[in-house]
Each structure stands twice: as structure tokens, then as C-alpha cells.
Length: 197
Length: 253
Image 1 (tube, chains in turn orange, purple):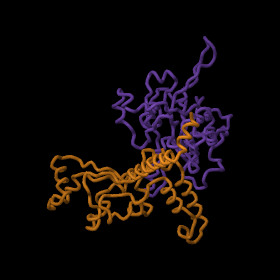
Image 2 (cartoon, chains in turn blue, purple; image 1 turned 60 degrees about the vertical axis):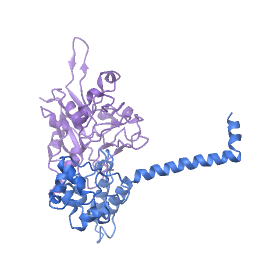
Image 3 (cartoon, rainbow over the protein chains, first blue to last red; image 1 turned 90 degrees about the horizontal axis):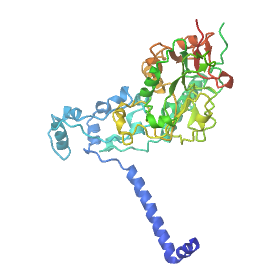
Image 4 (cartoon, rainbow over the protein chains, first blue to last red; image 1 turned 30 degrees about the vertical axis):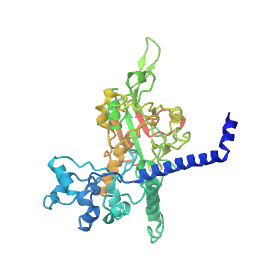
């Protein structure tokens, strides 16, 4: 039975069939991966670039990043704080006005996300001297936000290891006390329980 | 005279500049066996209620339980004191070397046992090797409202600081590590060390008799170190050499 099937598939037409099936499976996989990398559909095509270039700080709309775990995504009332004084024009602003009129929250889709079993806290990262763009990329070139890189564990750990490595950048005088501190910090920052609990 | 207890601080494989080795003291003379710690632990850590049927199969999920044994034979029966048993966070943990996927790992910086839920594939080897039976296995998605419509309101009671575990995953007491992390973060933001008594696990917080004390055991000045360093102190199954982080006090006046 299996031998018979093998004989059928070994003919030229059979080989072409196998090739076509392999091609379909491969392209399906590529399409699936591409879909997973696409930024999600947002209710409003929010132009980050315009707002950043007008000089609005990241922390004005995402204030939680300074002190808490989550920066927060603004509600329609925060947008309206400025936009009630600005003419409602174009394609996106009427959508905002409709949300405000109906007293509905804007159902933003979070993009920079980690899974449920990861507990990321923004505060220590800001306190360690990181800027928003170090992880979130140059938002002044984006309309709808897109992650500049895949936010996976390897990416997190690369930074944790680099920031605690005993090298001239972190320890310019090669002080053994600083080296011990960096070592302890590295153990702590590469510990599973730092993020997973 | 204080009894010599093997201390988890006498460790070679922890980092030199530790952030704090955490330990617990349970005073069995104060414990009334009221189970408030069990309820508080389940609410804090999203531990599901398995229901009557699965509990009958021995699949109850509790990260802390009150143990009590009968001594002697009828009619001369004496009950042992109430004994809340949670993960002892052993220094030499028997659960760790048996995990094939390194889901049960040791924290080098804090000398705690960790369970990494996203690594766990559910071989249940660790639970078989745990002498304290502190680990519980998640047999079903108990908290999934689609499977348990009667629990639909409980799905709104999840603690956002703790992972909601899926089925097929081993879990155990974490010494309320989310509260340790929160206290560390608060202390760091105020540029100071964690104060003694700042980290209170859910069981200690709920205990009406204050039988559970939690704190750093690498610092001899803390309340928990001083409580552990008495003649009443003992470790569970000390002869196994697991060097637990939980000390039980019993036999006081």
C-alpha cells in the first residue's frame, strides 16, 4: 500500500504535486508569520509623529511609565483636553469627537505588550536612565505605533547583561567594589523571578 | 539554650551581594488552625477552586494547608499542634534537580525556589520529589468561565500581579514574590533598603493570631531572624538536609 503510494508520487507529476503542496504549506507559514508581525488595527490612525514634533512629551499621554508598572493609554477625555480647542477636521478627528460625544472610551489595541506570565515594570527602567526611544524606537517617524524590534526574552536579557557587564563603559576605573556590585546586579537581573512570577 | 539550626545563609552558590534571603517563622503555639491563611493565599495568588468532584480525586489546589496528626491509639489520643505547611523554599531543594526542562529553578540572588510557569511541561516529577507535598498540579483550566459557569464572578477577582496559570502546569507557594518585588520597587524608588516587616505575605497578613512572621533571615536584627533563633525552633524533616527557609516554633510554655 505504502509502496504503491510511493511509486505514484515518484512519477514526474507526483513530484510536481509534492512540490506544489510544499510551496502552499511554506507560503501559508510565511503569511501566518507576516500576519503575526503586523501591527493591529487601531480605532483611530493616531499620528504619533505629528504630536511628537509639536513637542508633546511621551509622559504627557503615558504618565504611568514614570512611577508605575504600566504607562497607560490615554482615554478620550485626555485627547479632548487639547482637541476641544482645535478645529475638528480631516478623517480622524471626527472619530474622536464621536467618542467624546457618546462618552465612549477609545478601544485602543496595545501594541508593545508582554505575555501574561511576564511582569514588566516601567519605573525601574526609567530610573535606570533609559529613554522611551531606547525600547520603543523613533516614534517621531511613526503614525500608528509599531514595535521597532521583537520584544522577546532574549532582547530583554541582552540589555540586562550589557548594562551589568564588567567593561570599561560600566566600570571605567576597574574598581573591584563596582565589579562586585555589577556581578550581583547581573545575577539579580538575569534571575527568572525578576520577571516571571 | 538556642538550638543550632542549619541556616540557609551558609550558602556557597548564592550571589555575594544578596538583596535579601527571605524566610518565614510559623509559631505553632499561636496557630489556631482557622484556615484564614489558606483562604488569603488562594485569593492573593489566583489559586483556583477545583470543585467537589476533582477534590474527590485528590486534585485540591492549595499553596498552604493546615496539617494535624493524631498521636497514640484510642482512647489515649493526642492531637499534634496545628501546622501550616507551605513550600519551604529549601536551600537544597529536591524538586530542582529532577525537572527535565528547568522550570523548577533556584534564585541565586535570593535563595528562593522558583517555578517558571511558562517553562513547565507538567511532568509532575518535582511534586513527586517534594518531601513536604507543597506543590500542586493544575489538572484543568478551573478558572475558565467557559468550563465552570458557576465561577464566572471569580474570574473578575484575579490578582493582576500574579500569573493566571494554565492547566498542565505545576505551581507552588512563592513566598508572595509579587509583594517582595513591589516592596523592592518602592524601596528603590525612595532610595533606601527594604525595612523589616515591609514585605508581608498574604498568609501572614490574614493570620489573626500573628503566628506567621516573614522577613530577611540573612540579617540577624530582623524580627524573623530573632524569632527563628530560639530553642523552640525546628525545621520540617530536618534529617533530609533540605535546609528549609521556614522555621516552626513549638513546645513553648
